[in-house]
Image (cartoon, rainbow, N blue to C red; front, top):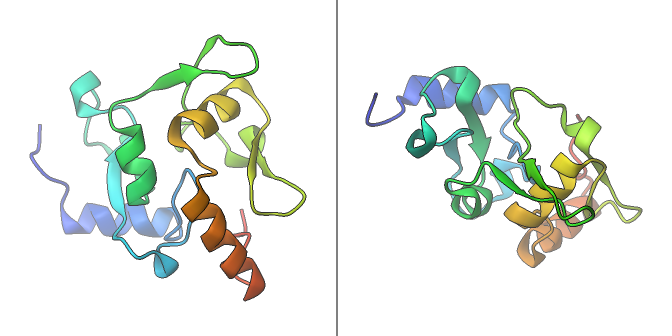
Length: 141
């Protein structure tokens, strides 16, 4: 297994994601931290370095996710897999609230991912507000 992800692969993953975090939908152009190419199924859990297992993520989502692959759905209290950007559609599992600043989970996967990755953490919602005010939020699907 490779020790690092090449810059070529990082570029492919970032372009595929349109330079937007595949979890919280933060655009990298407005982030104060560099984004990462993260393993959807972590290497520690047997995940590979294949493009199908790589996602573009902000540091907040990447750090919080770490090796998690599932979490409890807060509505049913039953474990659910976390959102998988290659296998799931964001719009199937999430939508924006009425203010367009918060993410709502539509399914157990969506709700578990929001809670586990803290997709509505204060700093992300504050950035969404500023981006909304300048016409840069919400991102197009």
